[in-house]
Amino acid sequence: KQEVTQIPAALSVPEGENLVLNCSFTDSAIYNLQWFRQDPGKGLTSLLLIQSSQREQTSGRLNASLDKSSGRSTLYIAASQPGDSATYLCAVRGDSNYQLIWGAGTKLIIKP
Amino acid sequence: DVKVTQSSRYLVKRTGEKVFLECVQDMDHENMFWYRQDPGLGLRLIYFSYDVKMKEKGDIPEGYSVSREKKERFSLILESASTNQTSMYLCASRRQNEKLFFGSGTQLSVL
Image (cartoon, rainbow over all chains, first blue to last red; front, side, top):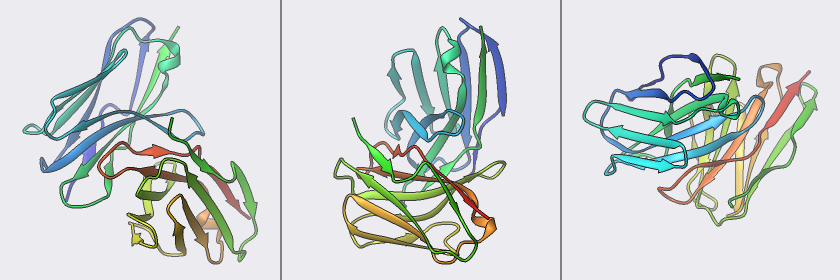
């Protein structure tokens, strides 16, 4: 059964730093992996989707990588800003079904 | 931009009431989902629909039903609301195999 883990659960860094958020999964037979951000009391915003055949995706200051063999994905945020403060979640879709398996999220705080 | 619209941002209901949560998407997406999100429990899938009139149970379907009569609309029904159904409800949709897009959520309180 697929399990998705995000460590750490919370992270606080000064503004301007580059940072990496981690997502690990136990079953490498994935169809794709998606990163989201969630602001308090709001819905989720899709950030990046990586298909299983891809190694990385980039959008602005965000870069997501995927290493299926090691069961890991990272979300790299360059030059962090206070507006990046949010909870970041990753979700894995398996090969054989429609459902996503969710990590518990990393709560990121960027200090001005 | 994709828009997923949930009919209410906040809702307060009494125990035993029948509750309807509506979700509409404007991008002709085949797949639609209903999740609930609770502190410490994360996102849990209630039901999903991979096409019109099709529905599948998720991880926690008990006490809920759904309806998808038209492609753009996916309704979640609480047959007889209970206090343990107080939660944030999130609707999402996607084209097959593509990014998942969420609505802004409905915070439901059952008193």
